[in-house]
Each structure stands twice: as structure tokens, then as C-alpha cells.
Amino acid sequence: MIKATPFDFPYDGRLVAENTALIVIDLQQDFLSTTGYVARQGYDPSPLRAILPTVSRLIAAAREAGVRVIHTRQGYRADMADMTPYEKWRRKRAGLDGTDILLRSGPGFQIVPEIDVAPHDIIVDKTCNSACIYTDFELVLRAQGITHLMFSGCTTDVCVHTTLREACDRNFQYLTISDACASGDRQAHEAALHMVTVEDGVFGVLADSSAVFEGLSRLGDRPA
Image 1 (tube, one colour):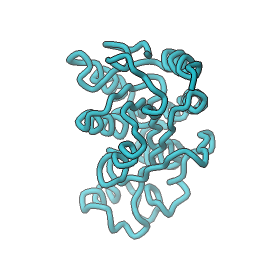
Image 2 (tube, rainbow, N blue to C red; image 1 turned 60 degrees about the vertical axis):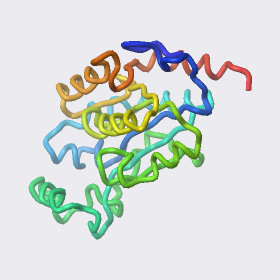
Image 3 (cartoon, rainbow, N blue to C red; image 1 turned 180 degrees about the vertical axis):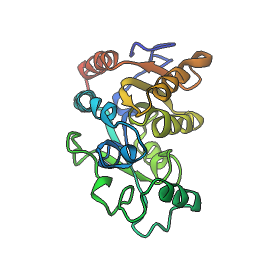
């Protein structure tokens, strides 16, 4: 089990590598660069970049323990046919018209080079904040027999939190790794982490990376 708040993960004490995935949300150039979406919205992307070493270590530990690594990327078609009128309005309001920011055809759509994406990792592309909406994310999880999810990435208050809430309603077990998630807004980040633990874990549990490393190391020691 992994030491967590308000209870250890998972609640039933049965943590199995083959049923567990590390979810790495949207660690893309468009969110982490100084010229990308987050920066153009007026936020400092440096807190997002600060989690990269921790996430990289988590990815390595997950692989060592036999835990699946699943990355997500957010972006729209080059022709924006999948972009709603509201999102087009927000895009224009943010001064993004005429750019390739948040378009799958642009270089910013790619995951930052600091994150190792292995050939056997799974990548899920999405247009919404949640990885569960209009994607094959849930289908992939069910097909792989994955029932337990550990969340990292950005931003804590938007894409990470929206995905874990959706996963909650789909009856997955979920853990948020507090120091492996980040936001450009400190208050929103802290509030999102706090909301995980309210009502005795209504949105799962919260743990820091040290607890996850310890749990994964024990998992990796189990005989096959």
C-alpha cells in the first residue's frame, strides 16, 4: 500500500502492478514553455517545469515496478473543426488567433523532451480538460485491466482534477501525487489538492512522491 491522506492507497490493500497506471497529464510544450498557452494567459509556467524531475523519477519507478505509464496531450485539429464556438471565442480573446498553440499540427503539442516517452507507453490525445471525454481513455484502461490510477501533470486545478473526477464516477481507484502536479495559479493548485481529501476522500487520496516511490519499490520486489 501507499501511505496517503485520508487513507492509504488502495483502500482494500490490494495494489497490483498489472492493474495500476501512472497518468501523466499534458506535460506539453504548449503548457510549459514561456511562449505557450499558460504563459499567454498571464501565468508563470515555471511551477509546471519544476515538477519535471519528480515526474521523470516517477515514470522510471513505475516502469521498474511493472506499472503502466499513460500520457495525455491536449490540442485541436489543425482545421479547428473540433473546436467549439466558445473555445474559438476564448482563443481570440487570448490573442491566439493565427498561432498554432494548442493545435495538434504545432510543435507545442508535443510532450516536453525532459519527459521520457517509451515506445510501450500509451498516449491519449484529447480536446477537453478531461481525458475521459471524446477519447478512448476509458476503453484503453478497461482493455488493459487497469483499475487503479495515480495522477501527475498539469494543471492540478483543470485537466488533472477534471480527469480524476471523471475517473471517480467511472469507479476507478485514484491517487493524486501532490508534488508531481502543478498549476500556474498557486491558490488554485492548493485548493484542488485539498478538494481531493474532503468528505473522507470523495475524490480519492493524496500522497507525495516519496510515499509513492516507497510503495512502488515494494511492489517491484514482489515475485512475478
